[in-house]
Image (cartoon, rainbow, N blue to C red; front, side, top):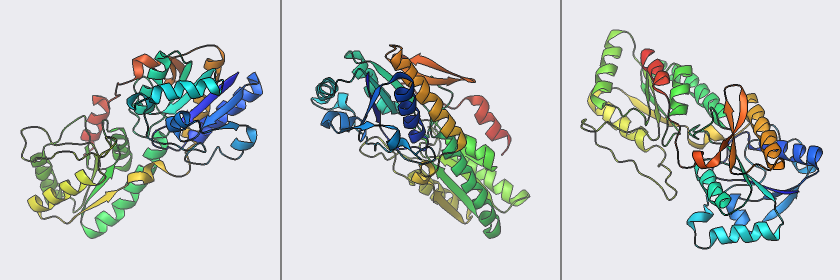
Length: 341
């Protein structure tokens, strides 16, 4: 069987582990030919493909990024895009297509599945907001990087008596902010799920600095916003693909805090550092497990499904139930962050 494989959307650490698993399992166990498409759905539309063998995946387990390349492109949202995808898959004699991606890539995959293509999806996103799975590839590495950054910022914040704002990724859900904030001992964690009140932040910082500390660390997700009816007015600036302009909320908070408190305040925007570099062992293992499960599912005739971590097990969930949904940070985790302020 000829099996197609692509990685779409933003890169994350652990993608090559999943690619490696698909190739090793598919070629070694089933005798499949694995065809990789370059640069996500764009490569399928353009017919930009290459055979993937064990030689291509050698020494890739610990390498970040994706050896296939990636791009933010959604064929179902482009004129003729879906027809071009179907034409390429037919000409390449692809019998099943494994798609590794986040919400945009998975939504496109569900549309292609509706057109009759056998699709198996693998969730990846450092935001960890793909519905239906406890964890996505890339999240653990991003949290590890963010936590290390917060650990390092502690010493300079205390030495200079500053308020340090650490902005992390998280457009719709604040998983990185909540988990790294707890792990790094931040005083405040601001996430999209819980709009904040700048007046309460002002009172908290003044009380803390008067009572027992001369510094504070605030971790804020890029998608965090002030609550309606509060004294801070802010509209989230977005780019071409709906991505939030990096540093926007961090800089706005800095200006508000300095104006209201007089405290020296600095912003650190981690940005793309969060999804670069060597994947953690957790992401290497998760990518490997998802890759094996995906090729097994495709070989067994399953379609329109996604690999998902449920507790300790990898299961298959209907892709149609995943597309368009967001997995938000639960109140219990946010309450832990608030309790430790």
